[in-house]
Length: 243
Image 1: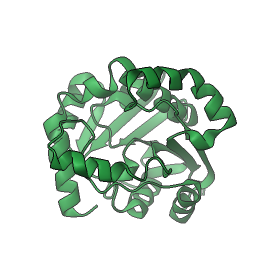
Image 2: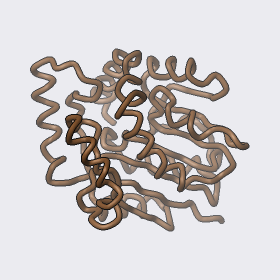
Image 3: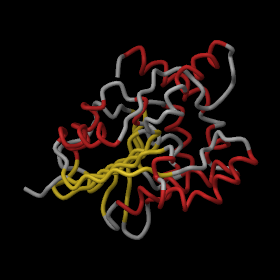
């Protein structure tokens, strides 16, 4: 990620750290986030140590720990890290970027990332770093907005919203990049991961207006099972083979 891009993201999330949970941990935001995070949790090992890249306020880390599991959260925003520490004092958090993970090789049993990958300017570097810090046999799982006809216009909407000074947790022009199944599979393969699984999930997107969101929730199980091409988020898992 370029210095300018990273600085802009860092400053934005420092600013909205105290209101971030109103977006993802209340009402429909909680339902949306829980649905996505369940996909990731189901792919991760039942024991071991996790690194959560782009941990934000620690929502996913809080869900992961317990039953012999521990976690470390990593985020470029010191404001978000401060909030995460207040949420879960038993967890470890550190400020840093996924493209330059500040941990030794073969440190973690699992790596996760929720709703962050589209912001990353150098996805190859992030996945290479994730591979490096994973122990042999370790698992990576991430979920992010995917490349669809409906999502192609989102960066332009965010750009307009920024120009109009719209106050929104994620409505900021960060130059997002979205990926389809083939692009994700290629990125993970090139990073060295095996047993790669890519699937679409979540038809009820958080930014839908309430009546439409409730309807989308009702038909979401059918969409994900029968017509996953209509889902908005893409979830990817992979494994670092044992030596």
